[in-house]
View 1 (tube, one colour):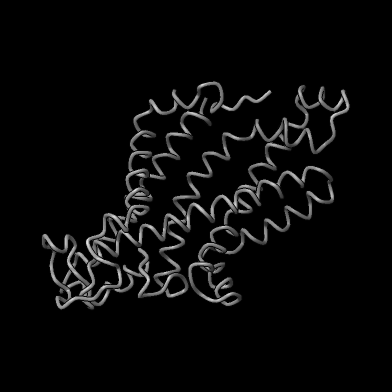
View 2 (view 1 turned 180 degrees about the horizontal axis):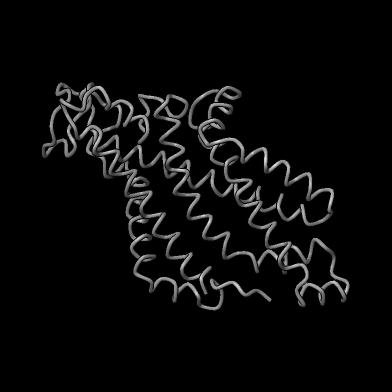
Length: 277
C-alpha cells in the first residue's frame, strides 16, 4: 500500500499552503504567458522597426532592442521557449532516471554498475555537460533539452534507488515476495508508489534548475541563438546596451527570476508537506 501524501485527497490539503499556492500561481501565470505569446505579444518577435533601443512606451512596454524589435514580445516568446524546453526535457530525464534506478534493484552487480554510471554523470556540471552535448550534436534548442534531461537522470535515479534500498526489507515487500510476486512487480507496484514524495519535490526543483540551464547555455551561445528569442540569449544581447535601454536586460531577468522563484516556492511547499511529516 502506498503512503504517498498526494493520494487520498492530499492535493487539496497541499494547495492550502500559502507558499505552495503562491508558487503555483506564479508558475501558472508565466507558463500561460509563454503559451499564449502569439496572442499576447504586440508584434512578431523577429519584426524589426525604426526605433532602436527605445525606452518603454505604450507601443513597446519594455522598449525595443538594437534592431527595433519589441522586447515585450521577445520576452514572451523567450518564456515560451523556456517553458517548452523545461516541460519536455525534465520529464524525459526523470523517467529515464527512475527506470534506471528501479532496474538497479534487480541485481547487485547491476546496482553497482548503475551507481558508478551515476557517479560519472554527477561529476559533470550542467555547463560542462552542455558543452559536451553541443560538441556532439551541435548547439541549439535540442542541445539544451538533451543537457537538461541528462543532468536529471542521476538525480532521479539516486532518489528512487534510495527508496528501493529503504523499502525492500519492509513487511509489505516481504509479504509480496512470500506470495510469489516477481521483483519487477514489487518494484513497480509497491516500492515506486512509496517513493513518490521525494520524486515530486525533486521534479519541482529540477524545473527551476532547467530554467538556469537554458539561460546559461543560451547566454554563452550553446543554446537557442538569435534571432530566435530565449531568455538567456536576450540577456546576452543586452550586455552591450545597458546604458541606452536598461529594460533590455530587466525584462528577461525579471522573467527568469519570477519563473525560478515560482518553481522554488512550489518545491519548498511540497517539501514542507511531503518530506517533513
